[in-house]
Image 1 (tube, rainbow, N blue to C red):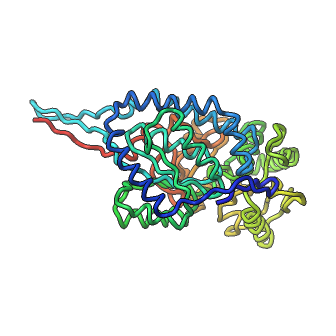
Image 2: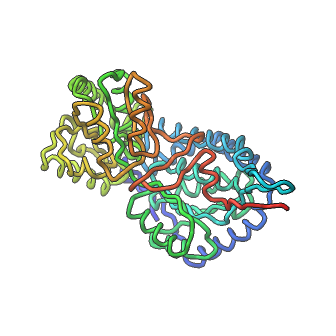
Amino acid sequence: MDAVNPATGEQLAEYTEDDDADVEATLETAVDAFETWRDRPLREREDLLASAGDVLRENKRRYAELMTEEMGKPISQAVAEVEKCVWACDHYAEHASAYLEADHHPSPPGTSVKTVHDPLGPVLAVMPWNFPFWQVIRFAAPYLTAGNVGLLKHASNVPGCAMALEEVFREAGYPEGVFQTLLVGSSKVEDVLTDDRVRAATLTGSGPAGRAVAETAGKHLKKTVLELGGSDPFVVLDDADLDRAVETGVQARTQNGGQSCIAAKRFIVHEAVYDEFVDRFVDEFESLTVGDPMDEATDVGPQVDPDLMAQLHDQVEASVEAGATVLTGGDPLDREGAFYPPTVLTDVPEGCPADAEETFGPVAAVYEVADETEAIELANETRFGLGASLWTDDRERGQRLAREIDAGCVYINEMTKSDPRVPFGGIKDSGYGRELSEAGIKEFVNRKTVWVQ
């Protein structure tokens, strides 16, 4: 299992994959750990999570540089990712007790009825490379604090990040086996998931990967949470603040090299402001610095590897062949590393890859619409339903239209993002279940009714 720097093609390190005996030992350790961890007072689990936040805080730069080396995230964004992980740890360290308080219900005289929240056991987490720390912490912080134990199967191209995350919990003082990394390829996921000792699974990744995990888990009646792809609309209405809409739209499409499920991908713009928006949007795209992700001045780093960059370029070329117009970008950069330029497409035909598929890179598809009705119809003409961003100076108008958008979240006059305080997840082909907030911590608990007569 190799770690390769996508900015240079240099091999950073080689890791030995776990064999069957290693996997078996990990599962046994997880089961043993759960038996005592589940009975640990919640206040103590919260304190340990706060300590994990401290470890992240104290090693922020080192972990950020590891992310940047393994998957190419610009260093400033990598630092921000570690800071967000600290925030999630702090949040659940403060609020887990309140989230997991028993729910009391109306009951006949002389009785007491409540719902308690018991942990399930070992939870398998299949996590992606694009936010290699945040995706893991946002499952581990709530699920471990609820009393579960975690088994991380991270993406094979970020093994160093996987091992570093195990280090975080170990250094924080977590008991052995509460959080463990499985250094295995995707072919091993089914075997681990079907093992009776694994009680549930969460996956962030592609649609095919999500369907495979859901099918296997369903056969064995195991709970799953899936956060899959997205083709998020960014709707700009005629009364929008164009200064902020353009600035935020550029960030929403190019952050992390555009490699984000909740990145804005389809920009749907009212005809009254379309020409001005496009001109300013293209200017901003062309002003971005594409380069060394270790340089603080870099806005857009490399794509994660040459193969995925080639897939992105195939989507762009197929869209152009179908009739789309390239206003800027559109060809891999002629330099060492997997660098793709920020690209803007207009005249995007229905059904072409830029319209119907998820483009996992800095490629924006821009559409012109006549009114808000057409804008909402186009926003919903996708098999995805993760997030959406809607821009209007009329807050009531924004809230009314937000109800009509098919998505797990709608941000009005703001970039779509995840936040420890609010539920996060999608509908349709973007998955199901919720992470973060109170909703997230309760996904993998047994909501047990206790009736006392």
